[in-house]
Image 1 (cartoon, rainbow, N blue to C red):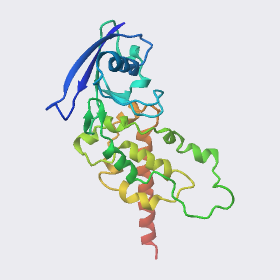
Image 2: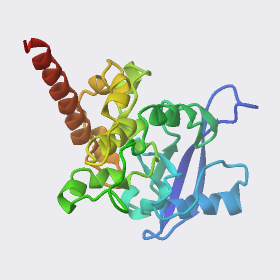
Image 3: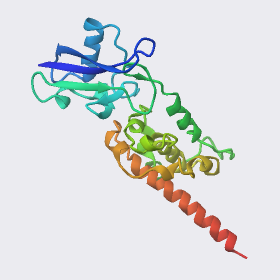
Image 4: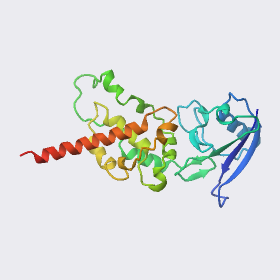
Length: 245
């Protein structure tokens, strides 16, 4: 099957503005979009820049916009993005992150926001025996969020960042929830100042775009709303304590 890749190109060292370049190739409908990109890189244009690593949907490095939607090139089949022989696919870098070259973006801002929620277990209590025991039910509360591969597809998909670049983003909040909902964690107070502010959880408007594009099927919007409820419950509890004689 013949197809055309319409790829957004940009080299900040040489180009004043991004532009599109087209590459025509033969591709098996059951091959992945990443295979088509690799073919272009190897046989048509070695200057093309994009990220890849594991090629199995685990590392998240090849997240891009595919026909305007965010996803992983390695998990997208050719037949999912073209309908007939000769169709074209438009590929662009993720939004809201500066382009380093072609489909490669600078992820510094994304990871700065991610680290701000302290995405690790916080607990200084003594361990009774060898480990802190957790039931299957307790684990299930946050299980899907442990599948996050930090691809930033949800970040790029979020409409809120278009109007408020300071929004911490869906990935960071989902990872905050992963530990807030963990029965072993004691870091609520440390994460609260980052989450309980306009550009924290309250910026989320429930567009569900993050959930729709997540390659690991994480219920991101639900986890954000659960985090909001945790904060509201905490505030109600504090208000009740202040009213006590």
